[in-house]
Length: 394
Ligand code: THG
Image 1 (tube, rainbow, N blue to C red):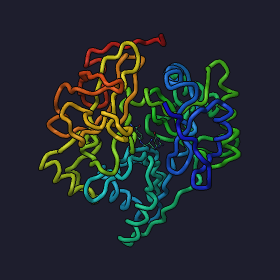
Image 2: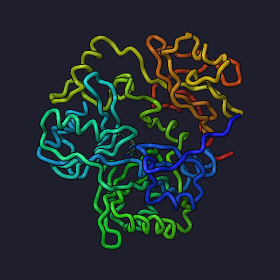
Image 3: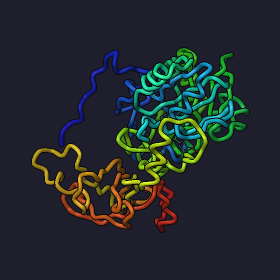
C-alpha cells in the first residue's frame, strides 16, 4: 500500500467559508472539485453512510458553484446549452439539466434554478461551465452576463433534515416541494432554500450568499440539532451509487454523449427547441447508441470484493490486460463501492454494445481472482433483482 497524496493548498484550490468548521467537525479527507475543496470522508465511508441514512447531516457543498446567466438572451442561451426543454420551467423551480456540445457529448450536468424570466443559475458539477457559456454567448452575440456569483451552498440531508430545517427556518420549510425553492428568512436575510441535494435520503440545499450569516447558520444547525444526532457530512459514494445519482467526471465525462450516459430519459429528442446538441443526439438515436453506462453487481456477503480497474494499473500489474471478459479496453469501470445494506459490490461501467446488453460479465478482482457479475440498468432496482436489504447496521 502507498499513502494517498497530501494536497497542497493555494489560491487555485479554494477554501470555502465552512472549511475550518468541517475540519473541526472531523472531516478527514477532501477532494478538489471546481477548483475548491470538497470533504469526502468524516469517520469512514460506511459509518458516514449509516449515519446519513438514519439521522441528518450538514454538508459543505460550496463546490456546487453557480454559473449565473442573466439578460434578455439568458433562456435562449440555457436552451442552447441543454437538450432538455426549459421553456416551461417555473420561477420557483430547479431542474436537472444535462449540458451537451455539438456532438451530443456531455459538458456538465447541473441543477438549473430559474430565478427570474431572464435569470438562471446553473449549479454545476466539476467542469468549467462559465467559460463554455461565455464562449457560446460571445460567439453568438447574445445579450447576457455570465459570471460566478459568491454563493456557497450548504446541504442538509437525511431523514431528519426537515425537522432540523423547520427548527431553523420555520414551518414554511414543509411547504417546499421536491426540486422547488423558496426564499426563507434567517436573521433578516433571505436565503434561497430548495428541496434537493445529492442523496436520496431527503433534504434541502441552502444557497448561502453571505459569509458571516452562512457561518452562523452552519453553527445554528448544530445548536438546533440537539436530539437529532446531527453531524457534518458529505456526499457519500455508497449512498449515491445505491440511489443511482451520477457523478460527472466519474461515471461519465466529456467523451460520452447524453444517450451513452443513460440520461436519455431526461430529454425529449423530438422537442421543438433550439439546442446545440439535438441534431447530433437525433443522429445517434437513428444510428444506434454504441456504448452505455450500466450497473454491475457482485454478491459480496463478507465485505468488499473490489473489481480491478485497468486505468492507471501499477507497472507490472496483470490488471491492465483484462478487466472484463471481452478483453476490450473500451469497456471502462467507472465508480464502485460495497453496499453494506445489500451486501453487494456495486459498480457503474461504460460498456460497448453488445456487451452492455448482456446479463452477466466476468470481471477480474483486485486480489487476482475472477468473478461473475450481473449487469443491470441504472439506477439499481434491488427489489426487482431480488436482492434483500439489511435495514440495520450490522
Ligand atoms: N445540487 C446542486 N448542485 C449540484 C448537485 C446537487 N451540482 C453538482 C451535482 N449535484 C450535479 N449533478 C446532479 C445529479 C443528479 C441530481 C442532481 C444533480 C439529482 N437527480 C435526481 C435523480 O436523478 O433522481 C432528480 C432529477 C430530477 O428529477 O430531475 O438530484 O445535488 N444544487
